[in-house]
Length: 120
Image (cartoon, rainbow, N blue to C red; front, side, top):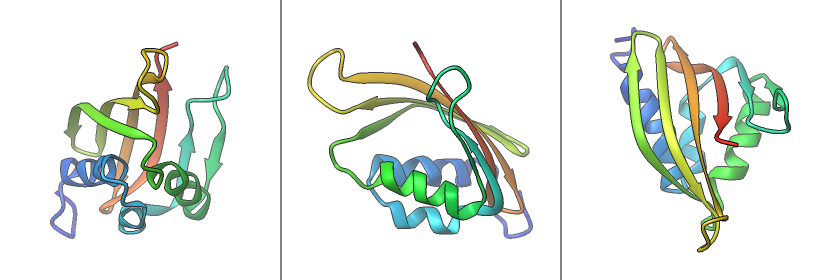
């Protein structure tokens, strides 16, 4: 539990909920200064976003559209780390989906690091 009484699991669940329920503004309270995101694409290492604003701009852009459907397959958290296994769909066909995982670090009640990976 952090100084604000929030557990890592609560923070990670709220982060995923912002995507699953298309609530991009909910991300504002969850992302820390100096946040780093290594995205799933492009290969081989993914794009790197540095700083709170850069991370928020990227995430809000994919949390908002109702055409993107995120579903959690599993959420795990311990101490300062969280893992979300997720599925993303953008159409009706089998080829219109991908599965992936985010590995998160939480510090002082805020997300400060996320590494995203997808099944290729």
